[in-house]
Amino acid sequence: ALAVLTGRGRVDPRHPGLGEQAIILTSEPGAARLADRLPGSAAIVPIGDSAPLDLRAAVETLRTAGHGLILCEGGPTVFGALVADGLVDELFLTISPLLAGRLPRDARPALIEGAELLPDLNVAGRLLSLRRSSSHLFLRYALAGPEVIAT
Image (cartoon, rainbow, N blue to C red; front, top):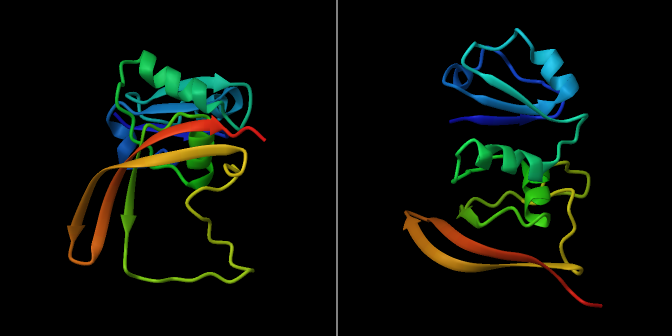
């Protein structure tokens, strides 16, 4: 099943992924915005009064609906919040040999945005598997944490 997280209800109703029993996790205003705009098979599930959404509530809603395995392909802000809240069990990380670089004025996000982990939180990974295809590495880590570091 496809689950879409959108605090404000900004979803393209023509997206082909919404035709197969999609779950839209949104706020109360987002649910009102999406009412009658999505295919009949899509379920709109309000999980908060406003954006940003409570990610613990999102994960709990999916687990209660029977989804034991959740794959998140969210951006760095959602990923950062999930990691900081201890909601990520595994990290699949791809390393490409293409170097991009970044200038101070560059707005491209990093892997985690909007959540500071170190020095107060320690989220450590343990390598579970490593695969190679040509010059790309595909790493799978078990994540532990976050552990609060005593100061």
